[in-house]
Length: 233
Length: 233
View 1 (cartoon, chains in turn green, orange):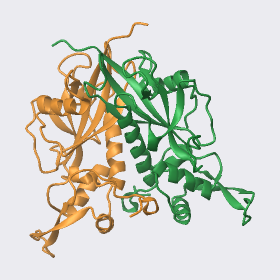
View 2 (view 1 turned 90 degrees about the vertical axis):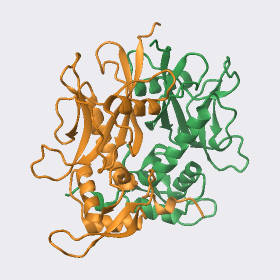
View 3 (view 1 turned 90 degrees about the horizontal axis):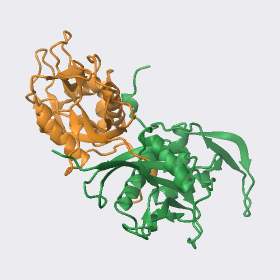
């Protein structure tokens, strides 16, 4: 049986918690990096960065290259595979099977973007290309799930932060508020954070100087295993 | 730039906890389904079931079809995507990009297998084809991780079981023993199990009749979220 020509591509939903200019309330939001298609099909819609996997690279190498080449994002703090998007009709024309990725950029970096590319609030996406909106939703769901049983917030947080800054990151990424005291208690118990020894200067309303923290690890680990199921020793 | 011809394939590591004939000690082990290659390349090595994704199917449909057609496994209790294996040189000849899957079969089913196919202890694999051994290791690691923060054991357990039978499933899947009392306490707290109302007849040594349980859900859910990070309400 002859097979249809098939391309394998990588596509990355890169998230950052940032102050979007369009936000009047002024609180940071979870944002995703999109570029606007200048050509058909679906001209004018917003697409995730990505493209064809080259012969000499694996899919993760390809995803990192496309982020560097196409949207000038050279450093992601975390990149992980999501599912593969393989509906035979997901794009018109030649079949494209897409390996989806979740990428994270720390809140304090501000990559220089090409003119067709910008950050968009995940809560208010513009019209997206093909199945890219579904991919963004899957990436966000994965992020929210991993916030609850891993240290993945290291990928979104600045290098050092106060607990109230970290709470803003969690609020933006989860889409709802979390209690600062509970958050601190949980993260301390899981040994996810380390105090830096410094304090932040008090804000305009005064009060105690806030303790500065950093994430103990800068790669993903599961923090919330069943204690009863840990390996012996 | 011209591109090398590339095939997209699915490959599934299907696990079952079963009594393997080669085990003298007689306790059930985590087993994986492999078939022996009759042709080169790598003739005689043991491979995971899978194959080329057809034009009219997505990768999960393809994985299920190949399991049914090639190893006669028509029912898996759980099937989930692992990572994509995409090293340009992972197999000789035409490039093959493989979507890997983890599949689970309940301990009580005994699928009829083709003559070239058999169950093998994950702890003592025969020589495996290409990168299939790495894939089995990744599948096993995913299973062990998910045993600690999800209800994934529903995919390996019989429909109803005693706590000591379930403990054998966990022991085999994790590769180390777990305490039965702890296991029961943790699973009860997470509301993963429901008592059926029946008891098992006492064994040859007598004792109290054992309570029979079943898994409350037959699809995957995360059971072990940070309580502090649950959505409101």
